[in-house]
Length: 424
Image 1 (cartoon, rainbow, N blue to C red):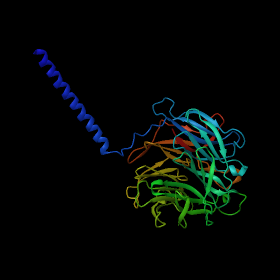
Image 2 (cartoon, rainbow, N blue to C red; image 1 turned 60 degrees about the vertical axis):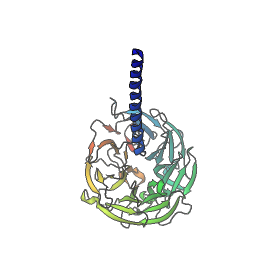
Image 3 (cartoon, rainbow, N blue to C red; image 1 turned 90 degrees about the vertical axis):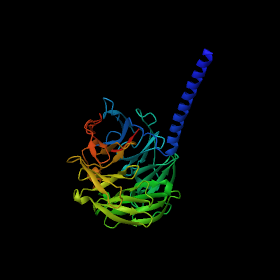
């Protein structure tokens, strides 16, 4: 009898535990069902890739790997470099980069490769982030002057090629497959009204792509007399068909170097900036119109607003001001009335241009170099060759004092010009 009572008591206790566990499990399940779209935890990048060129243009252009682990004693130090090999290793003027969707391949562009008749799109295997390897290079036959990269879902890339084969206009959008083969150059019949694409932004769920026209590249060279031919406008594309459906002209913009669609915006709106005019424009891609919504001259006259990045919720916008040596952080909760949250001053002679946000959007990396054509051309925006990391909060940008990286002395081959960056 005592044994029976004891077993009944044990059974009751076990039953209660099972019920409690089931309720806990159910609450966990219901919690996840209640928010099925909750994003997975963002990865913490440990490596920073920097696509750079020897300032003397004697040593090969290279991909540098930098320790990006905040917990490491070597945070901010160069781990290794992977130089280009074979022919055409120098004078490419390393420019923008793009990391494939699976994180295994880094595609890099050479802005001035065409001057030496060299290939201008370069692919690195970064599957082992600490020891990247140069794979191959490519040269689209109808276009030149590689600029921005957009990684495709199937592993390939779209690349804005700002000029035609000889660096004039019109340019093209080159598409590469996941095995680094050129599949097409778009559009088949490009516009003849100053089509020189530089920036690119895509919202696949809306079948929407935009590119910004910046400058006719050949006019930057001494071989072409006269002033620079700066463009002002954005092309709206059918993303799937790779066709231009309308053009947004912005007279007097003075070079629309970049463009960003606003994530989640139901109207498909975006931003571009006029480098010469010093204006931030809100784009209506459906009506094909643009209107100025902020004057960068209020921060620094002639400051050259250039590249742009946005957070995934579309509520924060970051813009480099190259000649002013500043980075501006906007609150874009109301797209028509962006508000300045912070103007980060990087100091005299800094020249910020390229910038990139980490996956968790807590760090913004900025490189202080735009373009120096040396004796070949008219553009000489050298910057100070430093790379900065800024801590990002909801309302502020603060320099990370622990990250000190100067490419004038970071690599053994001598002073180098750092440009595009990516993380892994």
